[in-house]
Each structure stands twice: as C-alpha cells, then as structure tokens.
Length: 407
Image (cartoon, rainbow, N blue to C red; front, side, top):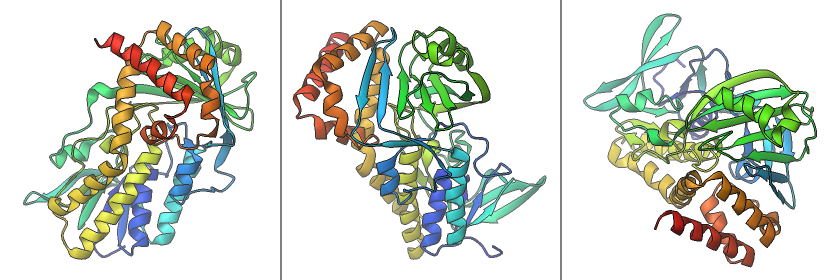
C-alpha cells in the first residue's frame, strides 16, 4: 500500500485483525503493524471461546484444523476438592489453537484488502495540534513516519499508545498475573469437560483450569493477584487433592506468562483521530479474564464508527465518542454485574467457596444450568434464568453471604 492508509491498526492479534477485517470490508485502506515476525506468536492464551458468540461474530464454524476440542461440561472444584459439575445439553465452548485462530482472522483481513507489516513496532503516535495523525514505526532498525486519518490501538495490555494520546489506562488494582502451559501425559480427563479449580492456595484472586485437547494433551493454567504464578502452577500439579491426580506425572512442553486486567473497561477509549480496542481498553470479562469475544465485539463497533467518521471526514473525539457509547450500551450492564461478582468472589474465604458449591449441588442448580448457551454476557444470562427456583435460591444465598460480609 503506497498511498496513505485511511486507518492504521496497531497490533495483529485477533482483535486488531478483526478491526482491520471490518474496516477493509467497508472499502477502507487499512494497514496493520505487528511487532512480531509472525501472526499468532507468542501465544499466551488458552483460547477457550463461546461457540454462540463466535457464530454471532460470523467466525463459526471454524476450520477443523483450528478447533482443538469442544465442551459440554464444566467441573468446578472447591478448595477442598468438592466437585460441582454442570452438564450442558450440547457443546457450548471450544478450545482453539490460538496461533491458527489469529492467522485465520488475519488472512481474512488480508483477503478483504488490509495490508500487514510484520516485525514492525509502532514506537509512538504522530500528534499534530492535539490530533492523532499517524504513527512512527520501527522496522529493520529504521524509523518511518506513517500518516493515517485514524489510528486504532489494539496493542494489548501494554497500553503505551493510549497514554501517549492522553488517555487513562486500565485500573491496576484489577491486574492478575497468569501462566499458561501445554502439557502431555495427563491422566483421567473427561475429554468434553473443562476443569476449574478454586482456592487461595492455588490461584489467589482468580482460578486455575485444565482444558483437554482431543490428542490427549491439555492446556493447564491459572492466574493470581499476588505471588509467583509458576510456583502456584507447580503446587496445583503436585499438591491439589484432585488436580495432582491428573497432572503429577504430566510434562510441560511450553509455558507462557501474561497479565490480565479484570477492572472493567477504561473510562474513555477514544480521542481525536484515535480509538482503543481489546486488552488495551480493558475490554475483558472481570469474572473469567476472557478478552477475545468482548474484544472482537468492540473491534467491530470501532470499525463501523471509524468507517462513518472517515466517510464524513470527521475523526474528532466528538464524533468518535459514538464508539464508547455503543460498546457501553451493549456491554455495560454485563460488565457491571461481572465486576460486582469479581469483588464478591475475591472477598470469600476458601471455606465459604466450598460451602457455596455444596449448596449449589444440594439445590440442583446444575440441572437449571443445563440449557445455558450464553456464557459471555453473564449479566443478561443471570437475568434470563433468575426466575427458576434453583437460581433464585442460589442468588439469595449469595446475597446473604454478601450482606454478612458487607454489613
């Protein structure tokens, strides 16, 4: 692309590529800068995604080579090893190979007309008169100025550029530190079930997981608000009353570390000539730490608003605020519910977590949840099922614990 691009996208992850895809489909000239030498690397995400949400985004069914497994069951283990199991009527989630998934979206964006520049790190924004008008890019030790009418920041959690644009980054109090491992020689896994492990001794401030793959290997990971995640992973694999029976002979083939922001979206994800999407905007579920689906959802909204701004030749913050308004209307209620749930979960002792799972099993909540398909928009999901007796009892029980903890 020799002429000036209409839009520059910073970051070739799935969120950046989806923004580029939607911009290119609307016939905008798009250039994507990715600092790594290949799309999808390094991979540091479990890639556990909602089938329904992917379908709503036009990304499902996926090619079979990308999908590592599908799941219709979730097993939740209390800190003491008590199991609350939810069997769903049909597969609701899938595990994807993140490298292949990222490349799949990037290839679709390129096919639509987006231009990719790999091994190209955006060092800074070009700002003139308070308006973002492009980027300065380092490639092969040379610095190049690339003008653009609008810049979409999908750089991830580092959030360098939004601060250069004068915006405030994510809430650091909501940060947890994660580790993701690929392991083999795992025992006694149910291939269609995701395993979730709770407890401050193994994942303080979050949880741990095992995601089986059809080839007999698994993805194992956790995140913690404090402490060394690698140490917690070793403790999970060798000390947990349930997980150790599955993992104590396992061999780690690959390990990656990453941070996750659970504090909810940043207050403002736009300014003159500039928009922020994905992890950089903290568009991440506070309950589960999943950022792909919400990031993709917001990327599509950002692309649609950016296209209209380019068409009108008005990239002012006054016009781009429509992006913030749209994703707040779409996701604000769910973020609010999930933030409250996260704060509540963080306040619970291991003993109370154990009591909650035992109570849920006693009242048959797992049977009420069997027809659930929506796992991303959790506020709306709770509203939908709140009129069932088991869900009402479960929510009343949580409210009682909350009021005791917050007199």
